[in-house]
Image 1 (cartoon, rainbow, N blue to C red):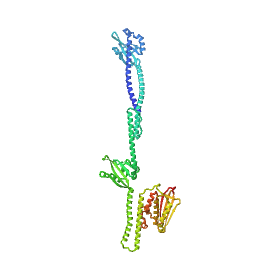
Image 2 (tube, one colour; image 1 turned 120 degrees about the horizontal axis):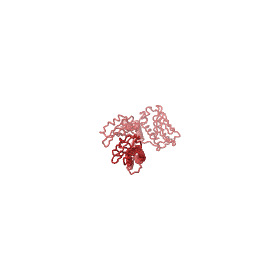
Image 3 (cartoon, rainbow, N blue to C red; image 1 turned 90 degrees about the vertical axis):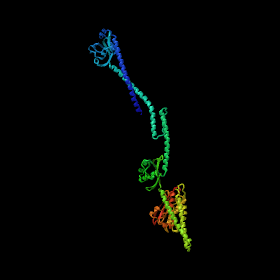
Image 4 (cartoon, helix red, strand yellow; image 1 turned 60 degrees about the vertical axis):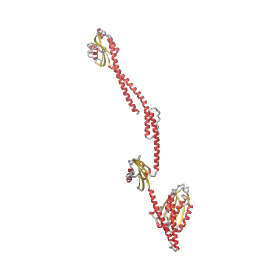
Length: 588
């Protein structure tokens, strides 16, 4: 910027100075020529004073003083008669010179007028300036006096003038350029700083400030820009804060949220939508049409073809691969009239639908499981109260059946309540867990289960590693877990079988094995044995007194205590349950 302005200034200054110098040169040259012409005329007039008579004119060629006068004045002196004959010349032999009657200056002088002329001299072979005046005696012009100088003398003077003027122009240009450079620098420097400042603002640097103190328009501009930067900094800080809050809210919302413009191009999408629709990342889909981004045509059709004029909200469920999505679509309007896009909220209801189905199945199973013993109890009571049975043995049998079905009903209700409590319970943290004394609890559990095992002639063995003294577990849950697993192993075992409980440490975990050599579980049923009311052999299960909830309770107990369970089984060989409890080895 400095260079461009400075070059333009130098060119303009040069043209102006050159024009002025050219005018001065022409004026000076003309004036100098006029001065020289006047000087030649005055010199000639001095010579004419010595010619007062015709005799004086005729004796000129014998007078040496004219030659001396020519040398003193550094000019060429020529005296010509009326007929053009040269009487005297200070530079050449007059006798050899041509007639001068045709010379312009001579013609003018013989006509009574002082005349000036410039031309090439054949005698001296140079360009000359000639001035001639008439010689008049007694009212009659008898000749002319011509005075002349070489033009190169004048040219030397004009060349010296040109050199002086060129030097003056150069010096003026240098001084003017320096002064202008200093002035323009003082103007351009703050302008450049202001430009850089404006560029920084356009790049988003709102903290920068201009530190110039001036009382002119540039100072006012700097102050205005500083104020603008402050306002922009505040506005963008607020905007960034709101964007951060919005992004924080959107990123922490589990539901998917998508906003589009009026051309259905995505302008906002959160991580929830990315995950639900299996998209790559936010940056790849922003700015794209929802059809191009989602690549789900039937979903796009449901969003696009809905009559939003008749219904304010478009709600539908969509099966996307293994997910069930509930999608809410609402048009966004500006000033309640201009459509600006869509707001799409996506909710993954897969688990909700799964739990609804489980609840329906559970309610149906509970109803069925409750209905069977209640119907049985009701039938036997009606039979007994009708008075149709006199045999006491049959009455006792019926009473025993009623008692058995009542106990079964009680166990079923207890298991349902236990399972309901586990469903509502969150995972127990390590700080909330108790340290269960393994040996003491297993002695108590053995005492409870020993009678049940003896009734079926089953050998019950408990083997505990001496290193394993305590496990981090809820004590009530631990007792329920072991009772359910051992009870299950005894119920579905054969008479004369055995049940072995092993407890030991493996790396940083406590391992519990409950092994039986009973009927086993078919491979196809293994994935479902922890489901509620699932029975491998329904008839045998009811006969054994099972409610169908024991292993479901076991699974929930294990989960809420940060543990895992798995099962291995071979039909007619037996089944082994493995429970793995993470523990702190310092506490074990």
